[in-house]
Length: 315
Ligand SMILES: [Zn+2]
Image 1 (cartoon, rainbow, N blue to C red):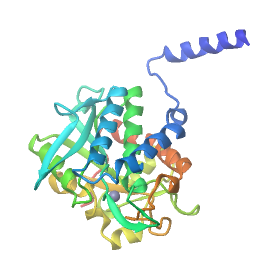
Image 2 (cartoon, rainbow, N blue to C red; image 1 turned 90 degrees about the vertical axis):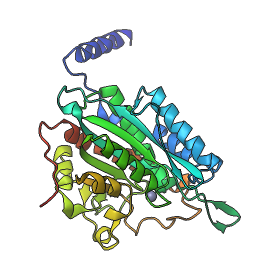
Image 3 (cartoon, rainbow, N blue to C red; image 1 turned 30 degrees about the horizontal axis):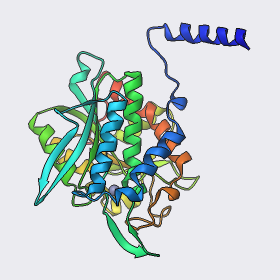
Image 4 (spheres, helix red, strand yellow; image 1 turned 120 degrees about the horizontal axis):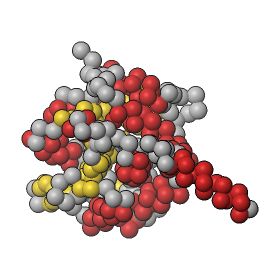
């Protein structure tokens, strides 16, 4: 055994000695870690994460601690981008990984999800906590996992902002605030993707996920091309319900007029607990979530590394 082990260590040392350190994508994302984060964010302790509550404060601290533990820097002075909503204070949490290319790092890609939820819901068997596991602890966990991944690989030429929004459920207030703030700084935003409800799989004969505003840009084609497999499709219901305008991508589209979309695996047939107290961690399919997070990595890598801005709004 020892000889084999020595040989193995030698091979690993050689393979790490090259110019580019290759991190094995499939092993970088671990189901147990996805599950652990989601179970905490969707736990009763966080009381449904309504903006302004003690529960969402705990969620924000969890996200900040996650960023710190994985050496992801704040983009602003602190991780929090705070805003006032009447008598309550909301805060987005924003992590930053600078691009590794001297020119392309001036361009930004934003990955986001909302970490707030609705707090309480209609009681079912005495349970009133709307845990928001799918909506949108699932998207939040995906963004955290990608932040961790890129902080390890540092293989992004463009800079990436990892953004978790409050007050989505109050009318896209958090993302609206952040979009305006970044617009005022005049950052060069290339693309923005918002992840909403990625905790349950679609039927096996369907494309894994779909994107809102499918026809507004070539982003679905490009992401599928970068990943080498068709992960992102078109869902007629997304257009019918105008989902493009109903989540946190929309304020970024409005402010910057660049490709800004939402990706989801909830297709109105595969989850009965939207804004329901049973939107709980035990309803999530962690194998699916982990697969989705893994599959998106080459797509994101393509997006953050192409020499030119290939993803464009359609005329
Ligand atoms: Zn949502």
